[in-house]
Amino acid sequence: MATLGIHSKKHKVAIVGSGNWGTTIAKVVAESVAEHPELFEETVQMWVYEEQYQIPKDSKHHDPGSEVSTKPQKLTELINGLHENVKYLPGIPLPHNIVANPDAGDTVRDATILIFNLPHQFIGRVCDGLKGKIVPYARGISCIKGVEVSDKGCELFSDSIGEKLGIYCGALSGANIATEVALEKWSETTVAYDPPSMDSKHPTPHETPTGSPRGSSLNLTALSGHATGEIISPKGKKTKLLALPSEYPPLTHANVKKLFHRPYFHVRMVSDVAGVSLGGALKNIVAVAAGFVEGLGWGNNAKAAVMRVGILEEVKFGKMFFASSVKTETFTEESCGVADLITTCSGGRNFRCAKMSIEEKKPIGEIEERELNGQKLQGTSTAYEVNEFLAKQGLEGEFPLFTAVWSILEGKHKPEDIPALIEREGSGK
Ligand SMILES: NC(=O)c1ccc[n+]([C@@H]2O[C@H](COP(=O)([O-])OP(=O)(O)OC[C@H]3O[C@@H](n4cnc5c(N)ncnc54)[C@H](O)[C@@H]3O)[C@@H](O)[C@H]2O)c1
Ligand SMILES: O=P(O)(O)OC[C@H](O)CO
Image 1: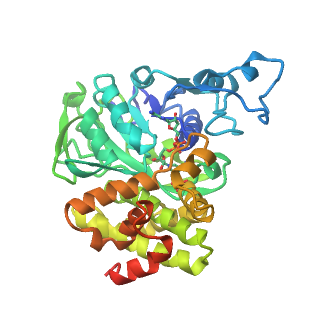
Image 2 (image 1 turned 120 degrees about the vertical axis):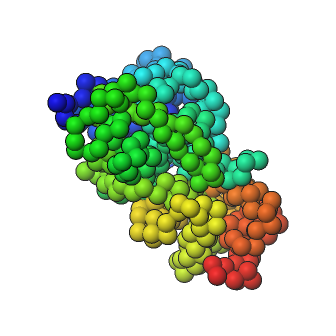
Image 3 (image 1 turned 30 degrees about the horizontal axis):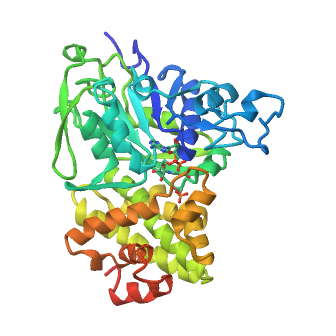
C-alpha cells in the first residue's frame, strides 16, 4: 500500500515577477527548493518583464573594456550571466538555480506552484496572458500588496488571480522590506493558504492529495487527478478547482512553509487569506500618510497617531467588505498586520517618497521616478483605488485617514489638515 511519504513527482516552482520583492522571494524560494529536493524540483524559473539595462559605472560588474558594460543589455541575460538582478536588487548574489525567463508562458510551463510577485497594476494583464498555459491543478501564492477595484467591486489579488486562471491562490505578506530580507537580516512573514478540502469526509484547512485523509493511505480512485472542488471567494464567486494529483507531495501547511521558511525569514502559516492580503494592501496608504506627517517635520507622536488610526481602518475595511473571512487577530497578531505597518512607516518606499514629496514640495510621482530606478509605489494608486470603491458607496467618511491621503494627493487638502480630517470624522469608532 502506498504511503504519503512516497511521491513520484516533485513540485516545480515558478515566480511571476522579478522586481525588488519578486527577485528577493525568488532567492528565498531557490534556497528552499535546494534544501528540500524530496519536495521540489531544483530549478526556479523567474519571469522577467524584459528591458534593456546598462550596468552603471559604480557597479562592481562594470568593466570599461567589455561591451556588457558599455551598451545596454537584456536584463534577463544580465541576471543569468551575473546571477544578480543588477537593476532591481543590485549587490545581492542570487542562487544559480534561478533562471530569468522573458517568456511568461514558458516560465510557468509545468509549474505546480506559481508565485505571483509584481506591482499590482500589472498583474491583470500578465494573468490574461497566462490563461491556458498553466497546469490546471497548479496552486498559487500572491505576494502582491494591493487590491483590485473594478466594476465588480474591491477584490483581493489572490481571488482575482484564482478566478482568472481557475486555480487556488493563497497569499504571502509581512513586515518585509525587500532589501533587508535579501541581505538575510531576520524578518517574519505570514503565509495564508487555505484551499477547500477535496474530501468531504475529512475537511481540513490544509491541502491533502486527492481525496486522501492526511497521514493515511492513498485513495486509488483519486489517482486520476480529476477530483474537483470549488472555491467560493469572499464575494461569493465560485471557481471550480482541480485536485492536486496524489503523485505530488501534498501541499500541507508544513510543506508550503518549507518553500518560504529560511533561517533569516521566519514563516507563520495561517488560513486568513483575506486578512493577510488586506493588511499588505492597505498599509501602503497609511505609509503615505506617515510620510506626509514626517515630511512636515512633525514627530514620532504624529506618526504613531496616523498608524493607530490606520490599523483601525484596515480592520474596519476588512470587516465591512470581507466579513465572512477576515479575522481581527490577523491584523493584531501576525507579521502581515501591525508589524508590517510599523516597518513600512519606518523605512518603506511609500513612506520615504511621501516624506520627500512634502519636504521638497514636489509631486510624489516625480520623486518616485527620480528615486526608485523603475520600482513602483503601491500606496498612491491604492489610495485612489480604495477611494473610488468607497466613493461609489458614499462611504469615504467611514475611512477618514484613507480618504485624507487621497484628498491630499488630489490637492484638495494639505498634509497639515490630517489631524482635523481624522478628528472630525471620529476615526475608528
Ligand atoms: N519591495 C519591497 O520591499 C516589497 C516588500 C514586500 C512586498 N512588496 C510588494 O510586492 C509586489 C511587487 O513589488 P516589487 O518590489 O517586486 O516590484 P518593484 O517595485 O521593484 O517594480 C518593478 C517591477 O515591475 C516590473 N514592470 C515594470 N513595468 C511593467 C509592465 N508594464 N508589466 C509588467 N511588469 C512591469 C519590472 O520589470 C520590475 O520587475 C508589490 O505589490 C509590492 O507592494 C514589495
Ligand atoms: O517599500 P514599500 O513601501 O513598498 O513597503 C515594502 C514592504 O511592503 C514592507 O513590508
